[in-house]
Image (cartoon, rainbow, N blue to C red; front, top):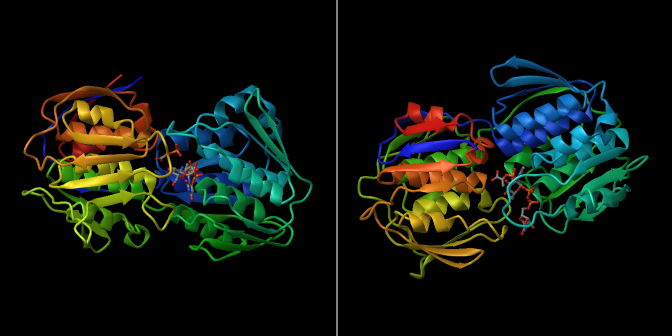
Length: 436
Ligand SMILES: CC(=O)N[C@H]1[C@@H](OP(=O)(O)OP(=O)(O)OC[C@H]2O[C@@H](n3ccc(=O)[nH]c3=O)[C@H](O)[C@@H]2O)O[C@H](CO)[C@@H](O)[C@@H]1O
Ligand SMILES: C=C(OP(=O)(O)O)C(=O)O
């Protein structure tokens, strides 16, 4: 279990360039299974989850070549499908959440797809019904081994159909889209998720020869094609990492420029930080955060009632930034209610913030009220363990702003989604050391 030691209170300054998006990269990597041609992907983040998926693809027989610092080419022309029955696959598959998205492409191209219960954050129930209901609608037979938590779908030929998803699942939509592109006839998916990750996936699939329309909306129409070809694709900057840097700058009262953020793809994210009173300035394609010398003040609603920040499927506010918003609010002037609607165990980390002196009332597993300190009192350093990726970064932000030296254990959770976070933080002035 790795550990960070952080001496709080240091100002950050300078420029930071966001990594490629973790959740997009996981979808795009699975899509390489849809063709026997070469797919080259740029801006792949060097993080644990992505590296695990690349390893899984390699074990499945995909020919992988590193062609640049963050660019790889993939050729899935000689797969070893026996691997899907192996013990090794059971280990590899459950190592991350994103592995679930190999099922759709495998089912579409080879008539069978399997997966052990995938891993990922332990942030509440994370069911897979949407994925498998979609495959079944396309004509697949489903089986589930309860003892081994092993899922399987098989079909001779998938047939396009209309489906209304029970929820706008991000990985579920990606999986079903990847199955439908090679199905016979037309598939219509209503209540599809439409995060930039999915828009990027659909754009890439269209470049490979798929016929998907409605990209960016919750109604996708997919005309099945016989086969797909190769392509080149560049992963967008990671919007969750960008939000994390905004939070770090504000909480440490630092001036920071976040380079090449891909503004058109950030949706409501900048505005949600602005609601906390944080200045998020657009400078070309960069975000400039000035030093918040006088802190930041939460904006109430127009009628004067307390601000609520909650998550929703895109174009709503992503649940992956709520823990960070909550943490940043602990030093705001004013109060805010954080409502995590999607996940039922994602707010429990506030215990640690309360230990550090933050004023938070955990109303129930989904809601927490934060009464900001307005920097009149600093958080106190402490020893903590990172429970999940975003809580981990939130605790890191709290530690960077705290008085004294904090320790964060289980930093593998952070490394799952943040590339060389300690190295990059050090480069902009943070006092952080990685201990093994
Ligand atoms: C690898 C990956 O891409 N992971 C992301 C993906 O996970 P993932 O695709 O696993 O998440 P889903 O979109 O399936 O659902 C997340 C949770 O939200 C609930 N839900 C979902 C849709 C909805 O309309 N209402 C609702 O309550 C689900 O029941 C579930 O508990 O999307 C999540 C939601 O943005 C993000 O937190 C994860 O970072
Ligand atoms: C919940 C997350 O990831 P995963 O779905 O991979 O667990 C996340 O990225 O915040």
